[in-house]
Image (cartoon, rainbow, N blue to C red; front, side, top):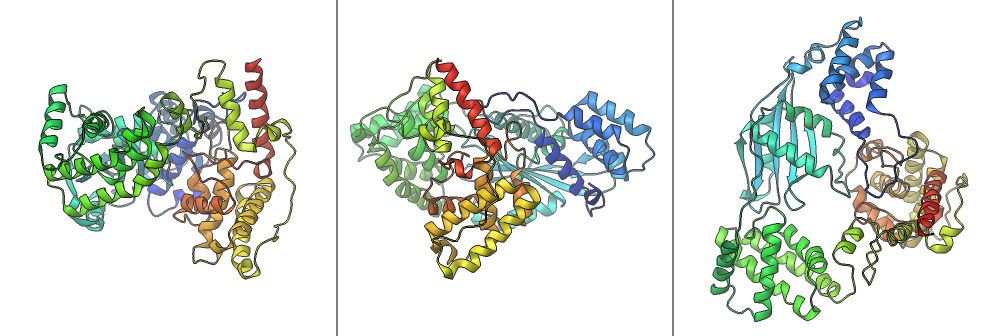
Length: 553
């Protein structure tokens, strides 16, 4: 706090307090998480602890919390406490409630996957900062990422436009009230998603984003979903089938066209003429296999239909040929997996939703019983996947992992130097941020990956990213990043220890496969053995095991 307060820009302090508030967000991370017997500290308790200790740092914390928390009662309480304190705060902190906002700006891409809504904030002492909110339409018009930078909005806009690839990204000023409505709706919708959307900066900056948004005027209009009645849908369908693009389609593909229009109108941004590589992937990898119950031979014709429809839609919209080629290439890329999946027994409907949430085995071949008697079995299955099966679940204990050295068994000598550097980085992180059990689990996982595929350490790659990925994997498996039932650490804080390297989750997937394990799935990491699990994590599994088994009696 002292370093942030003395920083060159107020954003140092604002961002830190935003992270604290985000960590105390009481919303559960999973609808299937039990309410813990003892809740973690609340914001009210933390504020009281700061009120009880008069220091410049606690005064600064309270001043920022008063504005960012958005609670009028708490703001009044904090102001009363600060009024009697002798510390003199910087002018911008004393007058933070008088911060102003400039015009909002929106960056949009012609294929419409999402928009960057940007808002400039001017603090009372003249410092400026900008908030960038990426609103993803494919996922339901929700905030997928956001961050703040210590730059004026005009400077940031110029930079983002100049670095955009190709002529397909444009910007325009956005009515300030409309910007508030769009951001507010997207934050609210994203907050109820599971698995939650996370990045190095989101949701850590959510309180800061919401504060900046509240500075904007009310009364604006959010995103307006297009309205397509049955007549509009039929007209679009007939225009396409009468065009040269749809002339060669057969009767099955005519029937499948209804499903494409259903997806285009009722999902994403609601525009059936909008097709991007991301929309293609969602349709073929997830939506059709999950939603459409039909023979494989019938579903197999969807990719060719989609290619024809993409060409038609892009011609109607005047999309550049290069973007059309990219979108068609996405069909080519997804088709092999699509053709395999539609010929494989798979959960659909509610079962597919549970599989996506990580609480049902996605390879389940039949629809499960989702009633009261079936639910405990579904939840027990998640525990089996975490520890490696029924026998491991039956014999699980909660003894702490021992302090053991790194094992070099099976690791070729030519990669010892690089692996050793990763071990040193991992050990330092565990010693400074975690504990001995995490150090042992990380060492075990790294040793397994290095022995399983030493080639990944022969290739050039940042060792700090590899070390961060090891700690991220073990942290995910042990619920380190869950705020209530887990460790409560922010992912950004872990990666910041390593200098915030990029590509941590991607490198984690490489390491998991090297260790013979599945990559991350919908935000979950199941390692299939207790040897990587801390005593605290195993105690939670034991408590869940006993509770769900009792429900079956």
